[in-house]
Length: 180
Image 1 (cartoon, rainbow, N blue to C red):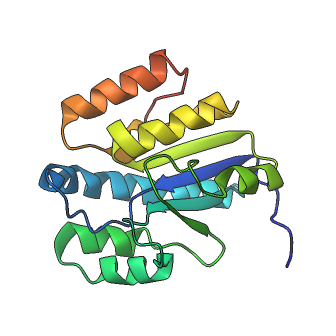
Image 2 (cartoon, rainbow, N blue to C red; image 1 turned 90 degrees about the horizontal axis):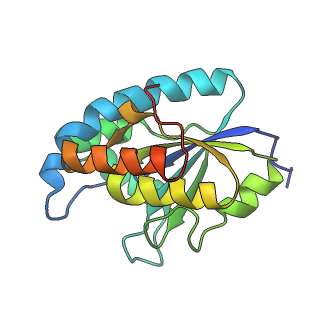
């Protein structure tokens, strides 16, 4: 098995491949579609610069789950949920992992992958800004990574929740928070 190529910067796409079936999801779905379009544009730009993309998605408590099955199931969903999954479907060279909880670092091989790629900076995008994106960015900061959270590439159940999370990431965890 070939080693992973170096990638000083890695784009981490958190929970965008998502059926969004939970209480309050309707508010998230409405803001997730514009965020997905911004993510797709940013991914294209970063990929041209040689950055690796890692998709980190919940396994929804199903320990026999598979990322490809999740993607296919989401791509067939009606409306924005299916559109997001089609728009952000991983490319062949992208890496995917399933996570049991909120942070992409918790109980996943992400830290090991980043070490193999000699990564120094993470660009963290996805849903929800005030939960999985925030916890992933905080964990990255605590591990010494430079972190950018493009504000237009995240979504939350409300603008207030998004604003509070981005404020904390910027001021407490010293993440760069600006539009892509």
